[in-house]
Amino acid sequence: MRHQYKFSVNTAGNTLLGLLAGLLLLLCAAPQSGGAEVLQWRGEGHRGEYPEQGLLQSWPADGLTAVWKTAGLGEGYSSPILVAGKVYFTGAQESEGQKTEVLSCLDAADGKLLWQTQFGQPWKGQYPASRCTPSFSAGEIFVSSGSGEVAKLSAETGQLQWKIDAMQTFQGVPGGWGIAESLLVDDRAVYFTPGGKITTMVALDRRNGQTLWQSKSLGEKTSYVSPTVIHHNGIRQIIGATTNYVFGVNPDDGSFAWSCHFAEILDAGRKIKRYDIIANSLLYRDGRLFLSNGYHHGSMMFQLNQNASAVEVLWTNLDLCSQHHAFVWYQDWIFGTSHPTRKWTCLEATTGKTLFSEKVPQVGLGQVISADGMLYVYDADRGNLILAKPDPTGFQEVSRFPIRDGQQQHWCHPIIVNGMLLLRHGDVGLAYRLK
Image (cartoon, rainbow, N blue to C red):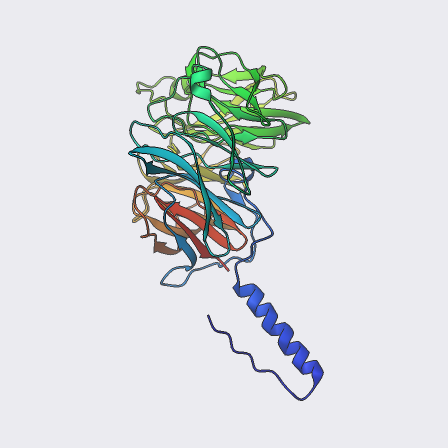
């Protein structure tokens, strides 16, 4: 874009003001490489809430302005992260006659591919595209492959530093769609949930991948849930899930603080087939934990006790059944799309009361995030990106435009950072200006 500025030549003061104004306009027009960062799937706490401000409250009729579009990432459903001016994606590519998963690093300013590194084997069953979102910590990237390998790479160079086949090592048992867990990392360990008869969750030394601890087994297949760290009354705990249990683990030694067979509670009194498929991380707020499960199973809210050693069920709700599209807990409302009814649904977080649950024309299942007082819905059925107001009485659409670059299902959870919205559609990474 060409900018033209008219400077006064009458006084040095006017000239300086003109130069400053021109510089300010250029800074506002260019995508910023510094500032905020998104280090893991759906950001802090996996909440899908992004602390951006000053974003557009409506979009032009022809959609948002693309900052860049970059092909060659490989097949994938996973989300990007952005750290220190670089964007990272996982993807599955063809290499010497077989599929392999790769980590791609792009320049956040222009989308230029900086490097790609192979790190593992994708799932060989249905939906083999990459689904693990990278996790960043202290200059390092941690990823899991669809077949259950866990790897660490340099965030700067992409060099593979270590890799273990965690599912084989711990005799893990995957669900029917392989491994979709995005890893939890802290300054000591990387946490992974293989499930099976030997253990449920393990902690690996982030320095070398060696086992620090392994929890007891709940006798369950692993789920597709990414574990979350919480702080409750000064107690640090990891919240995770298998196909039928949710639990809290002490990150120091892997001991279970509590566990709950959520499936029995949700399905109690109903003649319903239990699909052991749960994909959403639990959301934590003020001592409460929210869970939602697709396939007509429903949602529920737990209350942790004072020392985080047990949970009580506050309420259950059968209207919001989130498959893998997640939800946003905004103020006292929880918004999401329900599977398989495809109804836009809003629950009251305090009581679990359904405030709204109806089919909305041209809005189907979709990933939901929030920023600057607005909701963003990436429609998985049609590929539309939709801006809406968080209204508990109905779906209040403001703007939309279609994502047409790339192929595969529209299952990526977008992120919002540094005035940009970033997502991927299959092989293509995309960045749009939100200011």
